[in-house]
Image 1 (cartoon, one colour):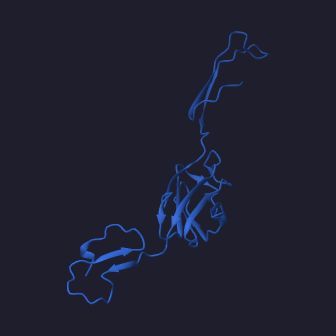
Image 2: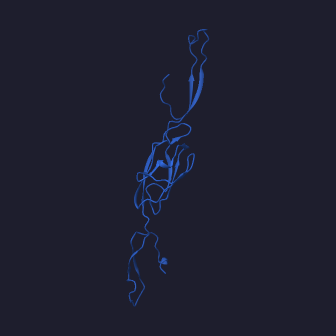
Image 3: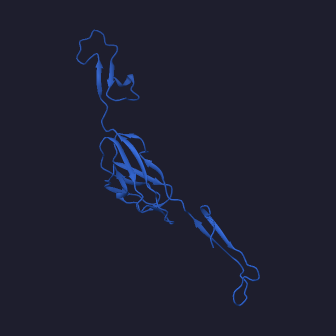
Length: 178
């Protein structure tokens, strides 16, 4: 029998009882039959990453990946950082999180690939298609670039100080100056 591909989920099949001519050699009529399948043709995908893809981070020594369903076959060398398998440890099972420990990459754009490899959902064995994402790694701390009036100046009035930082900072308040 050839049938169109049904949607994922429980698929009930019924083979109808035949006409009086649907019978065996002893003329016993076929009475029909029913059965079901649990169809899952959808490959697993990543549900979440920590840190989230696309972020600017100051440190990157661990990446956590969680799938939408339980998977098997996740290995340390499935995670590539800038094209190289550098993970030093891996823990996790089921849907995860799978925690990859990695050495800190160099500052700049960090390209991450989770390779398809042998990763598949359970129990159906649908293969993971792989995923790519990036981070911007900036591990250098912000600092003071200029101060007006300049440090060490002899001043007769000091009611205002202008500080320029070497990076854009958020949440700098008057209370931060002592």
